[in-house]
Picture (tube, rainbow, N blue to C red):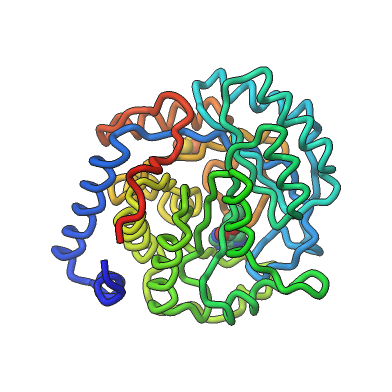
Length: 341
Ligand code: 5AD
Ligand code: FES
C-alpha cells in the first residue's frame, strides 16, 4: 500500500467504499491469522505512575486512589486466566518504581513455573537492565504504544522525566533486540493530530514490524490538561476502525485487539466492529473489581463493574454471534507472514 492509498482510505467517507476497506481487511485477517480470536487476560497491577502524560487519568498527581497489587494477588489472577482457558496474561501498570524489578521478576518466574501462559508486560518506559532481567525471568512480550509518530505532538503530551526526552520507538527496537515480541500502537483523535500523522503511524507499524498493534480512540479525561484542547473534526471511533483495517493490511500477521477504548465509545458493538474490520484479539479485564475503578485512564471505561467470569461469558457469546471462535494456545504473532511492502 502506498502512502497515497493509505491517505485515500483515511479520507474515505463513502459507505460503499468503506465497506470495501472492511472487506479487504477482514479477508486478510481470515487468510493470515484465521477465525480464532485470542483472549488475553489483562491485570492492571498498579496505578501508581511517575509520569505526567497530558491525556492520562492516572498521571502523577491525578486525584485517584492509588493501589499496587501484591505478587500473590497477581499470581492468583494468572491462575484465573488459566482456569478461563486464556493463553496469555498481560501485566499492565503505570510507570511505578514501587513495583520492584526483582519482585516483578519473581512474579514472572512463578507464573512461568505454574501455568502455561505467555506473559506480556506493559509497565511503561523502563531501563534496559530491567527489561533484560524480566525477559530472562520468562516474559515473552511487551506492549508500549508510541501514541503518535508525530514527534512534536508526542513531546507536547509526554513531558520528559529528567533530561532524557522519551523515545518509545527506540525502546520498541531494544525490546525486539532483547527477544521480546513487541507491541505498539497509537491513540486516534488526539488534539492536533492530522490524517498525515495517522498515515505516518501506519508506515511506522510496518517499519517496526510490530507483533501487536493496539488502537483506540482518544477519550478526554476531565482531570487532565489535554481535555481542554479541541479535538479533530473527524469521528474518532470511525477513524479508529479505518486504522484497524489499514494496520491489518500493512502488517497482516500482527495481533490486533478490539480495544476497551472502542468498547467504551460503542458499548453495543465496538469490539465486534473491530473484529470484523481486521482485529483478532480481545483483552478481558481480570483486575480484581475492588481495584478496577481506580485504573481510570479515561472515564466511564467499559466493563468496570463486571467480574472476570461475567466478561468471559459475555465475550464468548459475542464472538460466537459473529461467527468467530476462541483461540487455543498462546496465540503468538505470525512472523513468517509479515512485512508486505
Ligand atoms: N484515552 C484513550 N486512551 C488512553 N490511553 C491512555 N489514556 C487514554 C485516554 N485518555 C491509552 C494509551 C496507553 C494505553 C495503556 O491506554 O494509548 O498507551
Ligand atoms: Fe465485560 Fe461484556 S465484555 S460485560
